Image (cartoon, rainbow over all chains, first blue to last red; front, side, top):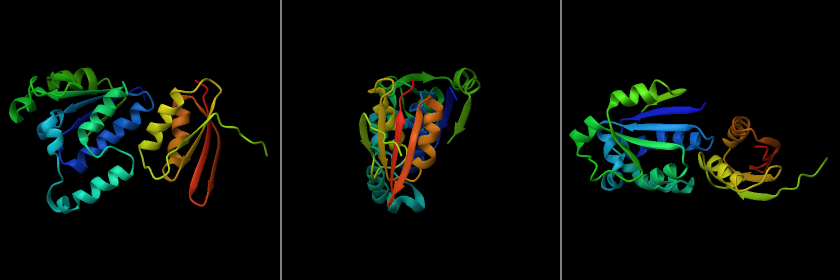
Length: 138
Length: 79
């Protein structure tokens, strides 16, 4: 597998961990990973948004336990720190969906510097997802 | 039984997927061709992950042993 494309929609802390972990594993094999953040998940590409991610619904009460176990596993338990580590691997690119940015308040002014930019979903689907060896949607 | 002499050792005890693989990848980058990395792990997922990672990245898994829940791997850097 030389390339992988991921679309992330879910923005709760626990649900966003899985695609980021998969990206981490792929980057350790020098697989090129391109990730598009859509819907509420686009907020994760801002400092404030990443810091505010939490666990929803019936799992909300377990958030402290989950964060503690994430740290025990050796991962940063802060999403922005994970994004920075992924970017530092040199194999992972983050993109903000332009529609999601417009709806949920993400723009060039508050986008984290680790992100490649704000892009149209059509470009991502045609140039990244359709050409990738593997595609995942979360 | 021949003894494998490691060039360096990486202890991932207590850590879980993806960190043993991520840290193995980082450690291998600092080694030269032919060097041997010993990896210590307690995550049972590494029993599949490390052989798979070696195959994918062109490294050679020389040995894999387990004793009292602690896994030891020796990986030679070939690429």
